[in-house]
Image 1 (cartoon, rainbow, N blue to C red):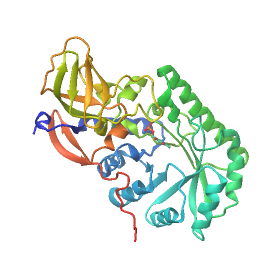
Image 2 (image 1 turned 135 degrees about the horizontal axis):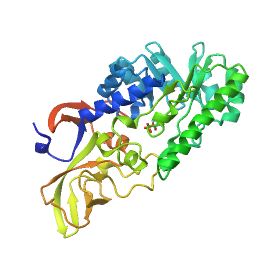
Image 3 (image 1 turned 135 degrees about the vertical axis):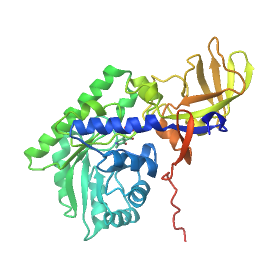
Length: 370
Ligand SMILES: Cc1ncc(COP(=O)(O)O)c(C=O)c1O
């Protein structure tokens, strides 16, 4: 079946591009002798996780405990890092159970969280990475304060220091390739400083993990960084293209839509809206982006507005499109777009090959309420 006979809106996944992106990042990581621990929250798919592991990923990074449990259960992943601090007795109990099936690293950034986790663990123990703040200003401590943070957490004997982790997500707010370079410098220099400070106080980092898609290929060259954890690279998107971190040809995920109305000379209406494309302009806001997605092969079109199931498209000049034409849109932020569907339609050369399920989405696990 050809993709053009699909009903719209639908999520298309170009398998050649997807496989190329997975192979390319794995090759770069291997060449730099850096482990790859892909961030799973981009695709939330067991099948894509398997592809990453088969390509050579050492383990995975997860955004949620749901994701961590699901990959260990379904993808055969044996090593998992949790990206963000977790709290609460029920969650710690889930981590304890997970630890029986895989090597698990939690992320910590302070004393209060450490105390609560330590108490909930009881006689059990767990390995942790200290979150370093390399400029994002979200979780973590700055390089100057890593030693004091580890010393305090060390007083909880069941929390085992294994290294540090950081994420320069602020890269998504910069204005171009040059500024990406300064974020890479920040990522590398703050990481190196943190490792050196820890070494001086006899704390050995077994794992030094950093990573975002735009900074990946340069940051992994640092001999201090042992693990990289990019996520978006599997799909890429309009933001990566705007940052100069990917080309349109490297964007594997698109939303296909149909022009359902042509109310005025300069306006098309599509049958897809914010419930396919998402309203965000990147994880941390990007003023490089105009509109709500890039219409592939049609620079004369600009998506100016989204309702939930409808998009308004401004036509600048001549176009060969008309009512009934199907178009493909590269989302601004593919991680958000992929989270809007239960499956993506995998294809090659316009021929549909198989469905790829987005089977690890949030809240997929029902809570016990009785
Ligand atoms: C802690 C952490 N590490 C890695 C990533 C992956 O970054 P990217 O999707 O830019 O490659 C994220 C993304 O949100 C993250 O929060």
